[in-house]
Image (cartoon, rainbow, N blue to C red):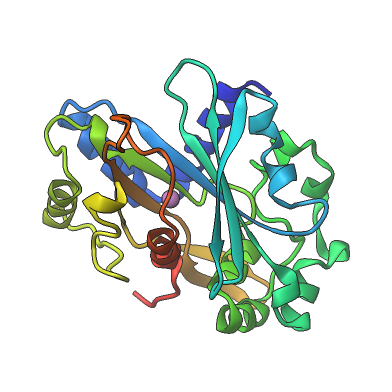
Length: 268
Ligand code: NI
């Protein structure tokens, strides 16, 4: 599949399912902005058939190269980021994976249960990353059990393969060229920000500042009925020049660690 098709299908699914994403995108375009994506993030598990190397293939086969790697000890996550090597304004791709050997056998048993995988598992990987939930059926009780151990695992169980978030490049905004101005605008418009670790994650000396909304709450059909749970969020990133004068292009693990919490469970 062509890269532009993958990116536009990811956006379509993400912006249709998360109402505030569409509203925020429209807010910026209505202010005359051209919205540029800093990065798109995926979540997966570290099994042989679904690990970062596999999920990255649709991108590495389309001109992306591996750049940085990140460890999130407390959340039992490992991540890498990829950048497009050619010309063109392609977003970075950030892929994290849950390290199942560090999780309980109950949790890894649920996520590794191939007998409950749906037909999406047999799709070529460029279709797989667009195919959403990995499981034939999902239980709310199992969701809550996973949630008690790992919010990441619970989110992946329900939502699977899709963009977990897109990220607006604050550097590309004309009217609100700082993360604080973006946050103030969003709050003024009634959007809720993730305040874990403060509204702004990172400092100018880290060369990257990030903020994000809290994930939209969406109705999900479980075996036991329909429950409203957090889906996806929108992120904002402002990059600063490194000593070589070029904008820093990596990620800051301590900041990303808190950004993960944008999908934390909450009742509305
Ligand atoms: Ni991100």
